[in-house]
Length: 513
Image 1: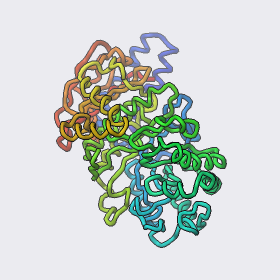
Image 2 (image 1 turned 45 degrees about the vertical axis):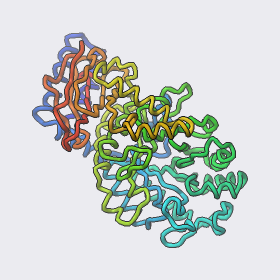
Image 3 (image 1 turned 30 degrees about the vertical axis):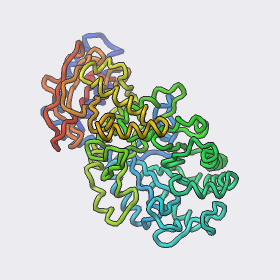
Image 4 (image 1 turned 90 degrees about the horizontal axis):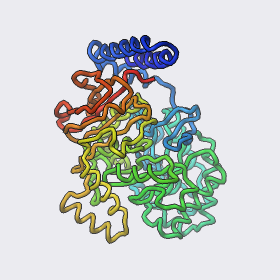
């Protein structure tokens, strides 16, 4: 039997027993729980225990789509009420560039990495690396009259439906952009609001019966402050909603979060964060909104890419982006690659990349635990020292400057290039999050340092371990399980498997219900 599964089951039964019988039996239960955790760590070996847990997850049932928002509005759940952690990829040009067999092969590869969401653009032209006339690789045009939204070509939209159905067979949700705004805003302007709304109605009717969809509007939507442009994109969303009342919606604004445009609030269910700065700053801002919606990291630096205003998608930066986001309250993140979002020749050789591997390890860590109950430690009452106060404030200041009006953004970009102020790769903030019942604390350290944890915030004796985000294995903390009172200092065991300094501290109560 899987030792960790046994431990979890034993702990649940122990919790029920504790409430029903005398204190002496509770003490015995604690002792047995501690022994079993020691057994999993030392005798069986943490790596083997985790490997067995991961294997059992791989055979678990796929999500029951469509998705919806949890009752506390912090994350997504499937139709059975099971929490859904968004672990996404962004093959945005897939409908236009891949055959259906190629699309299936791509998705099978991504599924092996634990990816459960794919950002795909329904339409694609030269601005996104597709054909000038927006046809597929084999010549299927989206409209009978080029760029006329009122003349949809059934063959093209059948191809798109087939792609969504293949994703469903792989257990994936498609985050589908109906008319992305990098290449298609000009077409929206020439068509006008009425045609945009009618196009949305067509899509709502055409795709509304497919369960595995999330509608994504925008895409580097930089003119959202222009009411005319905003109205055009919103008209498509309104048209879809008039025919499809089931699926969730979100919007990507250029280097902003969805709710920065308040006029989108009635139209969307998810708040998409988009930043090239330390991701915790924007995610926490969205998490703390009075009228919040579930926030997820839709876009940040991509692997194999180094844009002028970004710090580059090195594996270390990708790990920081992801852990910063989830431990700051995000309901997941979408990974991206400069090679695979455009699916340029040779993309097959770049699928099995360090970024995808590290994403898989991150998913394994959180998916095996109550990630959906984690609350960001914003007051630093759990991780009390070593979290990097200066780095935290630099990140939040950079986020404020980087989403201001354009002259301020240009000045900030110049400062960042010259000094590194506000960059990802120089920011050492260590976020932590904890469950309200004190049964779980997770902290991410971007570099080796000693941190202090207030152990009184945890529920009793605690199993403490370091998780290597580059290998997916655990290293037990000396003396673990440790007492659940007072302050305790923790230091990572040197460099991780690739020679970087980032580690994840995992603290789990031995008597968690």
